[in-house]
Length: 278
Image 1 (tube, rainbow, N blue to C red):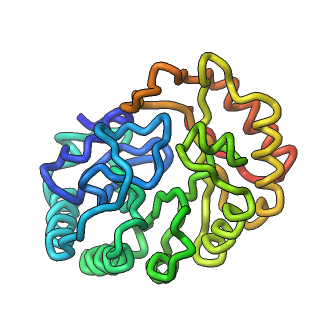
Image 2 (cartoon, one colour; image 1 turned 135 degrees about the vertical axis):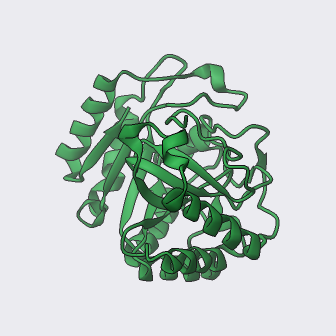
């Protein structure tokens, strides 16, 4: 049975398509993995991808992606997939999510892949029922090819889940393996907000037995404040699955009370809506 702790990309025996029970989406999510070579332009401390490498994905076989998604959606709608592999409380199909084993927008065919997903969902009459979500670190969102894909995502009623774990070059270098300058980050978030409903996704955890301190929390809130009214919300979530990175032993799961305190701080200082997934 699928659980929120099991996000194996090969669980359905397909190359690009895999099902997960998503804590944040609240049911069964059909994942789209464009980074089948485990390559990403970031290297987050908490990443669950084994043998993660820096780089981009190989070319996507769009015909295979279409066939895999069509076959899997048919299995969910007309077969016994939900009964065989999903607990009763999670037996609802909630979205198709570009996520996978690396940054999905690093694929040169990202826009084509969005079109393909839209066509398959249209074939089944699901475009008004299922969200198409992009789970992204936002680092490539300024590229025209990516913006073309985001435009189509918005036209299909989709959402962007934009990762911001820490704010500031030093803090993001430690957590994400890249030194994100706040001004560049703000410009990229502006692009997302102008294109489709956008959530922030923030992973909150202890590092070397210490939770994020007041300086880290203040930098996050200061950054979020100007965008708060335009955000769909913030997903504040903890560690659910073990990291497969060399620094895994440095990470620790925070008690739910710690996430609740930070959520209350965000809401008080920024006015943004926060949803907690411990």
